[in-house]
Image (cartoon, rainbow, N blue to C red; front, side, top):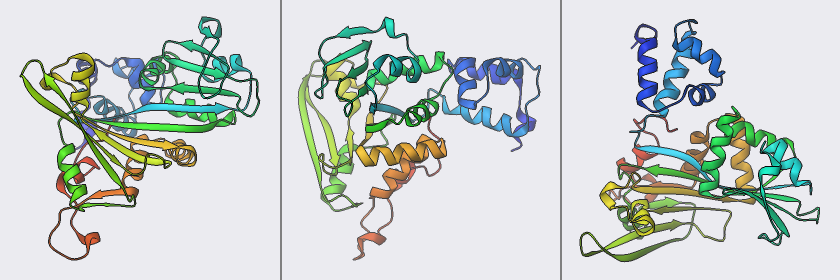
Length: 326
């Protein structure tokens, strides 16, 4: 299919609006200004063939019906300075005087400055310096600031590294909206030695609660692959059940069915961040980590586990015949 023949300015605008996507967000993903994108969308500028392809590629990555999405889910970074205002204003680019001061903190820090779920801790001990912590909601909140600043996560992390930051923890989450990651099935494969992995351990948990609407016990399944004490391990769990327990959302109405989390600490977090900074593709970084450590196979009766064929559902999850994630 020739994309140039299919390119249509009205179609571009309609699809963008159908996806609930702003010009600013799409332009930022494409690495161009909103003003320039507006001229493309209104037909004032004819984009090159390569830019057309890039625009549509990024546009499709924001399709709300994509079965898988990828996001930053936890970030903890230490900066070698005690100047918390400088970090807030030059790295985060937030108004420091809008942040709430609290005379306590965690991880042996003395105090912290907070804006929503964005937390910046400070110690007068230079070796501890300033610590930024973004949990799940903090990451989502800071994404809105990045969008307003016309910056990307990639640019933010580049600024952090340029300031001599030390990455302490980095979690990446892959949301499964259609149930491709059947946690009980993957747990069974681990027990049947059909999980071919560099990790030597796995743990599975089930948590039950009476489902009010159905008057039956529903079990939420969680699978940990790798040691929780190591610098890298995976956590797979049924997100729909978690949302039911926390928010009362019926299982059948949950937007996200399952979640695959990559949890990285210290050196492993640093190496992942460097890889992302170099290739500018967080999906590539995430799945290179998964593929390095893990493969689910189907036992075909042969003696060598390493030669067992990869499970088809797992192949689809890691990228066979599916679109790129956003």
